[in-house]
Length: 280
Ligand code: FAD
Image 1 (cartoon, protein in one colour):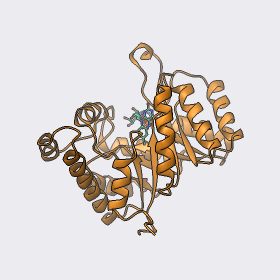
Image 2 (cartoon, helix red, strand yellow):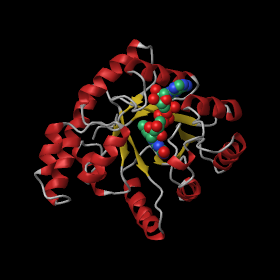
Image 3 (cartoon, helix red, strand yellow):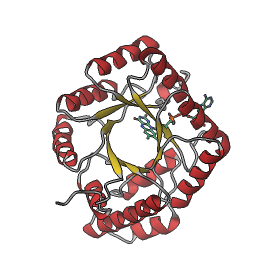
Image 4 (tube, protein in one colour):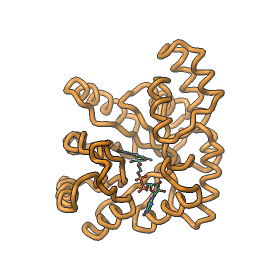
């Protein structure tokens, strides 16, 4: 077992009761793998806002270590302060702070950058929360440049966040180059790779084109050789992602954040392949 490698698991809040019930099972099983924490995503447009809070409080009451994602979205300071107080009073002490994106109907609102949210949390809540922020080894889609995107990452880390979790990627070189740029810009806080298991090619391709993550041509073409969702497809995806994680460990990664897509097997199998689980 690799004792020195920790890992965390991300969920999205399900929209249905059936989804909620399924997630309860999934998180109970994933919790047995010993994650550092679970995080729950947040819809900046308000779509999953209350749902995120409810799932976070539910998981917290089950005794799970949980980190709500948070962004201002279209809300004002009073709303965010109230939500932070609810989390604080419940004993939650982690956050993932983001600018987020707005749905088209709210696109006239000014988005509050993540560094501003981090400053807001630190000003009102001191060191109560351990704060993670997002970062983009393959460059945020709206960034005007690579170095500038990393400068903004430094700004949000300097504003008081503790570490950054990357958008997912399948190219270890992008992570290596990103670490070099971070070092060059004197960033000395942890950059934790975000890992996306491969389960559904259509969804992955659609999501990747929106968030600016690249699926290498060799990988796309190889995945297309398999029947979608078949055992062989899933095993191949797990092998590719396991291999990626091994390369990231070589590059010095000491922690992984898994985008579980609310599923148990893909993430658990990759953790097992990597020897992260105590089989004893
Ligand atoms: P920021 O760091 O604020 O950056 C946004 C863009 O503006 C970048 O192009 C950056 O270069 C630039 N920029 C940054 N600061 C400034 C500034 N001060 N002035 C001018 N330009 C600036 N989305 C959700 O809706 N819900 C989630 O729960 C969620 N979870 C995520 C978790 C992780 C780990 C990651 C990596 C992403 C997540 N996202 C989520 C996606 C994220 O919200 C989007 O990528 C969003 O477009 C950017 O959010 P950010 O916090 O990285 O933005």
